[in-house]
Length: 341
Ligand code: ATP
Image 1 (spheres, rainbow, N blue to C red):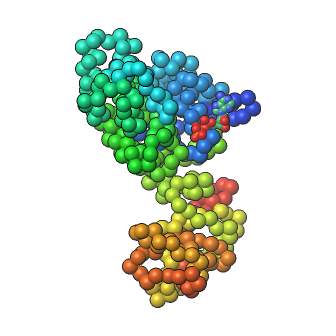
Image 2: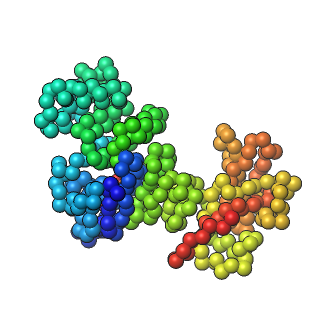
Image 3: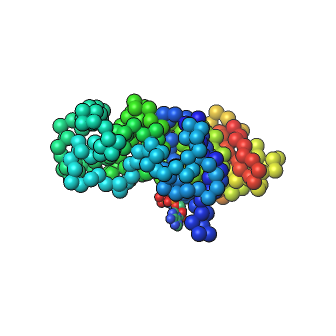
């Protein structure tokens, strides 16, 4: 295993920023470290980088403990949101920086920088200063500079946070392609779930200092292990009491927290339902046009749920009597979680 974190705990005074976090990362993977603000993502990144020492636990790179190895000896590249380029250095010199520190020869530096300029699509911009570049180009220079010395681990902390939505979307697809091509193990911090789902090979979901789940975006979406993960990744409805719903009466589930994704709710007129006996009666409360479908809010047993409806079906209106069929439900209680289909 390339990177291993074992039971990492870190406090600042009496505040525990990271609690017993363990994970393993394979070489060359792009990992999305995702969670709400203040959850402890940056603290984990800083421990991996050697900028903070864990109070408890170990960090291993290729099986070797690196807990007290200084940052410059860990072979790490960084790109941070505000980790500015050197303002008075042009693109070429910015990218060359880490190579100069490594005391490579002039010819080696030139060859490596040109290779990266080619790779990151910055050809023709070698002589420009950072202020003569767009935000997206600057982040590509920052990326090229970070990978130039061939780090064994690349850490990106919200690298696109300051960039507008459209360019940001392009940059993340670009980043995924780059990482796949260069094969450097990369950890990417974001609090944007769409960004993480789109680029990451694997995601680490962090909340209140704890690792809630590690898995591929699909695994996490399909099999969330905690209510937090189920509501943080993807869209969800939360039900306070499902015991009134068909099929759930006999099960002692009153205490369970129930989460249903809108994609797994079918809302239709009685004649449209293939299995009307399994459906619940509901009333439409709101309907929103979403471009590709309708978002329909219904009330069932006093609970509000939303689902989607195809534009091809007859339009629903507030007050319409409908039937609601639930195809999949996630149930969580203290000890376990179950998915019912
Ligand atoms: P964000 O998405 O806002 O960057 P994050 O998930 O990266 O958040 P961290 O920056 O790791 O979260 O911070 C976790 C918690 O630890 C926060 O409540 C923060 O205030 C606290 N914290 C981090 N560094 C320090 C420090 N040096 N001293 C005291 N508290 C700190």
